[in-house]
Image 1 (cartoon, helix red, strand yellow):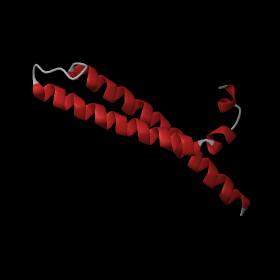
Image 2 (spheres, one colour; image 1 turned 90 degrees about the vertical axis):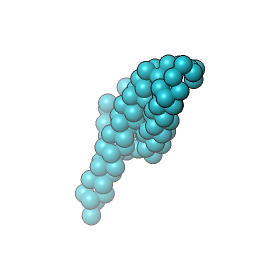
Image 3 (cartoon, rainbow, N blue to C red; image 1 turned 45 degrees about the vertical axis):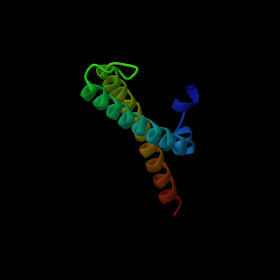
Image 4 (cartoon, one colour; image 1 turned 60 degrees about the vertical axis):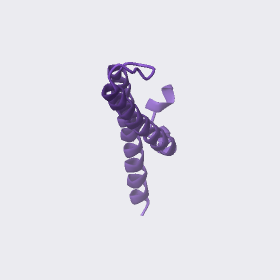
Length: 87
């Protein structure tokens, strides 16, 4: 975990993983929000959790996805900056 902060190499190498995790987290957040809407609309029928819990899961997943997308964007920026510097 410490190698993340020793230089930009970790971010450049793992930008693909960060993009995949960002996509998964974003789609999970959307799915959790849809299940929360369905749970809220159904009234007394509970789908595993109450609708508020589904919405909180959606918010947490989307915030995690935002962090992954930010890491992906920084990795792309560092890669482009290094590539432009070589020309």
